[in-house]
Amino acid sequence: MAINYLNSIDLNQNELIHGTIENQGSDALAGTPVEGQLYFNTTSQVLKVGREILPATNPKTYEWVEVGGGVETLTTTQSGNSTGDALTVLTNAIGDVTINSFAYAGGDNIGYVPTGGTASKFLKGNGTWATVDNYVNWKLSAGGGATINITSGNTVDFVGTGTTTVSRSTRTITINSADQYVGTVTSVAATHAGDAFTAAIGNTSTVNPSVDITMNGASTDYIDGEGNLTTFPSIPSSFNISLIGDVTGSGTTGADITTAISAGAVDFAMINTAAIVTEAEGIENNDNDTTLPTSAAVKAYADSLIVGGLIYQGGYNAATNTPDLDSSPSAAIKKGWTYTVTADGDFFTEQVRVGDVLIAESDAPTALADWTTVQNNVDIADASTIGLGNVVPGASGTITAPYSNGTATLDVVDSSATQKGAIIVSPGEAIDVSYSSGTATVSVEKGDATNLGAVIVKGTDPINVTYDTNGNATVDIEDSAAAQKGAVIVAASTGISVGYASGTATITNTDTNSSNTDEGEITAGQLTGTVTHNWGTAKVIVQTYKDNATDNYPTVFCDITRTSNAVTATIASTETDDIIILVQKIG
Image (cartoon, rainbow, N blue to C red; front, side, top):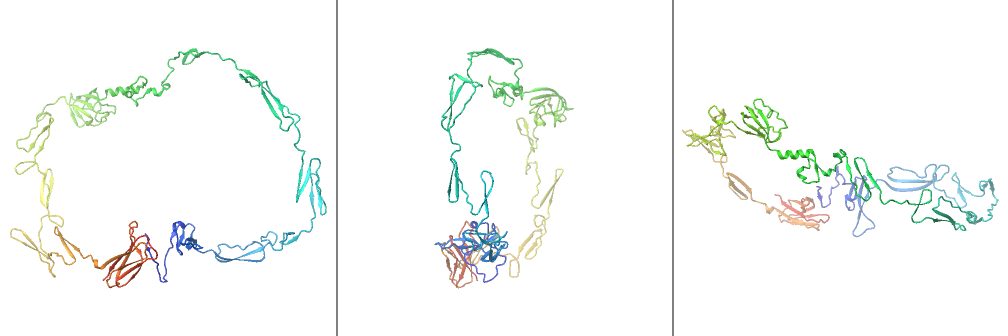
């Protein structure tokens, strides 16, 4: 953001080093100027200055104009005759320029018309004036005939004959002839082919003859290609129709015709697609008697009726994974396919035995979770045989075995002062625990700056340490004094408040120094504002800013004057916002 100065800046004849005039692309972007304001137009690459538009108006108006740099004065002289250019030509002239103009000197030279000419003179090619006193001759011919010379003193008469007349007006001779394209039409002929109409010529006694056409036919006639009248032949009221090809049949107009379609004449492409139900459309969505399903639609509908039902596929050898159901199962396996185990073995990660039943729960199953296994040969379990059994907790009470829906959940009870059970040895403050093969090893840590542990307490000024016979250490802190570090209590004093929280003292300066600060304003629309502080000194700091939240209260610079008891801020022109004046006493 630019720094706002609200009054003139006096550099006291010092240089403005590395200064740059405001850059804008147009007069509109530079805004309405005041007299003497400058900006550089980056589009036309010129320096512009604001000036008052004259004649003066009330209120005054201003405009942008280019600052000098071109021709400033122009002087024109007349001297001699042109021997080349009519004017002196200068390029990129700066300052005073003198332009010399020259009279025409004849030939290919350029110049203005020299003095000395009259109505009876002409300018010769050598640049001098001459008087027209005589001529030698001029030539005359008529109609491409012979040419004769008309010399000085000869008279030429233009005479008309017959209906031709000749007239003159000042220097213009007009010749008129009245016998061309004037008369009476004496003969006009009209011819035509056929008998459909008769043509005759009318108005032959005028210059506007007409051709009169008379039609010879009746309303029921028509004209053939030779121009003769002809009548239309009669159209029979009915006629026979016969159909041949893939569709056959016969009959007469006005009556129904029974048709037949040859075998094989209609294929799938000929059927209206609106009458065909595809697999994507689904038979179940087209329950009507007006459409035909495709083979794919019929198969998809039939498959949907049996999907999920058990479809027996045969035996499964779990020892050899035949057919392959768990290593690289076929993507063709469908939901509901059922197999009977014919040899013991592993099915994925589960053991199966002869007689077990495997049921696919989804298409293309690839995991044990995609199958249901029905056990067929479960025996009573013993120490060496997997089978049916019952889980009960032991007499010590360290194991619980609650049942839910036939499932026993085993759990070890937590250890307590009166109950054996499971424990987890966790490290505490200054205690380390490490495990190896289920064995926990507990040790005491050594204490350091960040960890509790086993330590030897040693005293250092201002801390005293003493031990008793039982190994107990007593730690004391010396009281603080001018020459002794130690414990202190922070107490409040004038202008200082102290607050404690969890052993932390917070010290606050309560002296706001209100007797050494003051403020005022230059009210919007005014040019000055005064703050009367009555401190009896001019040693004060003054800051000013514009009271405008939209502009984030920008700092502005005013003309400041100080007395021992007041500060006055002055600006060169009124503002629409208040200017806040802040004053602070120093010392």
